[in-house]
Image 1 (tube, helix red, strand yellow):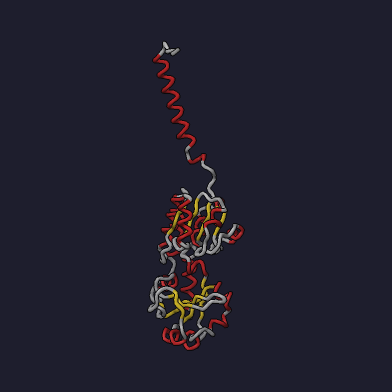
Image 2 (image 1 turned 60 degrees about the horizontal axis):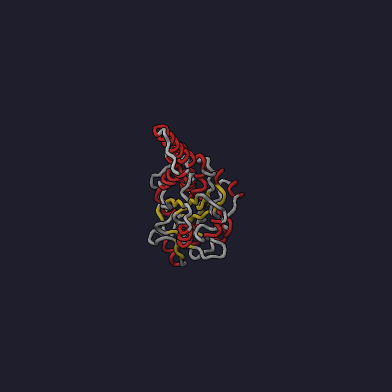
Length: 288
């Protein structure tokens, strides 16, 4: 037996109230404030440094092996070298967000992450001082910290403005060294080349592209005034070994033992440390 209400207007009002309550609950419970706390895996030392500077380090649950600054980041689990990642190691950290440099790889790892609908943000790896601003903006937007990002960009630009960039009559070569691996020089399309151009000196290896191994004849032909190496590189190889590399002793730099050691992160990563690294580098060049 079908029972009909005798109070249709009241029924309609009740239905309307219930509908509005349902919609209100849907909106209310889908609001970000009820989302679980973000768990971030950061892949790229430059990006990790910015996350800390933005004050979002409490959301970090893991990092890659290039993320070594600030020092407290070393306490986090390491998912491996950024160019030799594996999806299982990253997903084991149960991240809500994976922030990765465009240099990170291999590509198959990100294909696997996309296949499981992992939330991945790829950030520019452009080899330029200016790219640091793009990284700060990207992370500020992703972490909803736009105001802090704006302040950070202002601080970065202020520090960068203090770097002297007028041309110097110096020709340098950056030697990439790894223990147990053959040394190579940085040609164009590399971080050292961008740093040399910015600071006002010539890259002795500008006829080359990217990082390439060199012969004694090739180094002698480049004939740099100064050899530039990273701190981690020289710590592993040792200064004495630099002068024993093919052809180095035949160059002006080798004959006069002209060597400048630079900070790995600030010089190679285009990070918040880059302005101070550039200032120190310029002072060292002027003191040659």
